Length: 317
Image 1 (cartoon, one colour):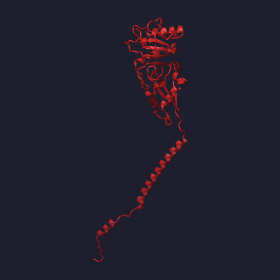
Image 2 (tube, rainbow, N blue to C red):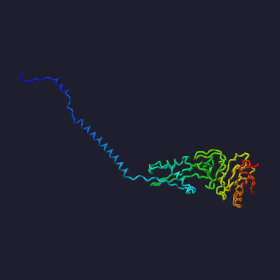
Image 3 (cartoon, one colour):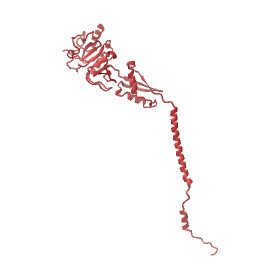
Image 4 (cartoon, rainbow, N blue to C red):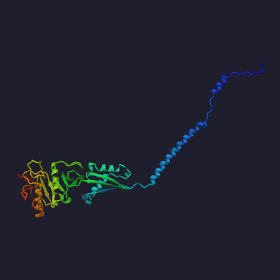
């Protein structure tokens, strides 16, 4: 019919061509997130640089912490003497503090106690406590090993405490007159490491003798103890210990160690009483004689005709 519009079938090919045409690329849609991410990265970098600069600036403006001072508390009298100041200097060095240490370190007191407790330190028997005292002090309280005698070995002398623990140092030959300490001569075993006990029955016997003499009125006249003739209990030698006095060539034949006397020998208590009487009467513990024997009679000494350098003369039949 003339008035009717004819409908056209869809152009499937044309539609397909329009659908296959690529969409327009949105440049701004791609660039915007990249730009934002770059700005974030730059901002974070600037922030970190600012923090580092601020930290360095704060460190440069804050004064450094003062060095930590060591304070020794409860020092025994012998360690306060000026002649022993070098011992405290050595102990302070063993504490091991440096300019990098600070009072804020939570492990500081523990580390100091551990350092002083090492056997090679020698002088410290026990660390009682280490306490921080702000702003810059560290207080240290210890039990110390007090030297009581020299032990001679070879050409050198070594300090030991009352139980025979070797203390630091190796010294040229000393004399009791110069140091006030008794010399122990004739020890067989070589020196142990610092902080270890000097083994040997003769060492233990001599140290018992040192403790027995200490504090007595005549103690200053006893210069040394010779143990080269020492034999264990049951041995043939009776004069195991010989006391040397500060009189040239003066000797006292003491006998067996205190508490280890045999049935033919008077006990240590009677020997001490005998020496007290001799000292009160003559002013000399050796009676100004080259050699006296206190092993047999509780009321008198004997003066043997002995050559002190001969081993046989130091035996009693």
